[in-house]
Image 1 (cartoon, one colour):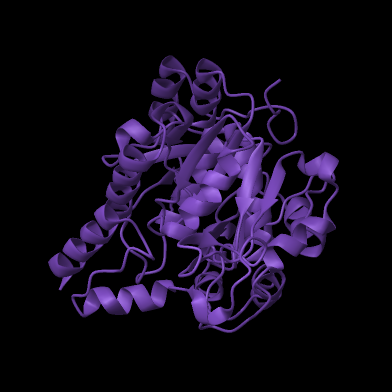
Image 2: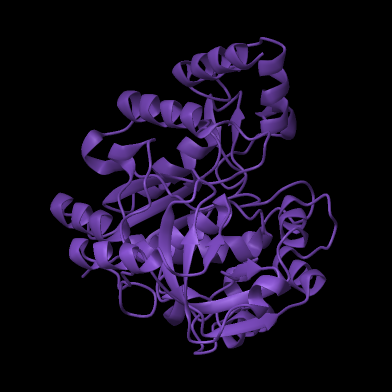
Length: 385
């Protein structure tokens, strides 16, 4: 049996073609709120059901429950607030129960929202709850402190899918990934979250997981990330090359995740798991410092947080892995669970170290990544120089 979406129903907030035309016509006369790229990513995921059971931007009750105890007001696990902010003057001009049009910076209407609530919130409190810090050097904190001061809650309807120009063949919403898994006969599917090119440690974790499930969905984030993260275009080239050379074609798929990164560490690990549950994954890989940044979280905090939730409510099965490394004596990837040798025989490569090598025009070694991937990364670094 396929895994049920979070809350039991895969939400769709996308209008039919006929309804969409009528909605766009009505939107022309509605008050307009311009949303940024991060909010657009959230809107798209609400529309496709990737954020089921949400039907729109959070109510005050849901927001406060998520901040306080990592559950929605109805008791379902949820760890990241999904909100729409406006300035106080704009909020004052809106009536409860009224409709507004949500548009991108170019003026294109992306959705119509019914404003059911207007509420204020404490930004430092949100930062400390979600990110475990209010340090402005944290990218998630910086983004939160830059948000507008009033939040609007209410359901949204998208007149048409959010338009894209990139990665079109890999943009499958949850209903389509679920159909794909059924077509392939995959009863168990493991999801892998990534915002970086897949290196040897990632490959090791994925293939360990593939030994116990029917299929793997590589699910990279292509929404907004940190400015120093490797571009989505380069990453997608790397994923494709790795799949073609080193993975069985009938047991892996590559699907983009339109979400924006929060860098919320433990809370984001739960959030990522629930998203993959909605896409149809039964298992989810959680490795070292999942969704972390800097030194704000402990190495395995993103694994420990799963103990705080009822597995029957999460339903998706997390697969925990220790920090993997190349062992010169074993001659392959390993972890402390499988390798008897000492630290002097273990080769670790951090993302920071690899970025330094690329800036210096050095090819990352095979202990870090496959040669095809190393060449792609080096060529991209030269092009950016």
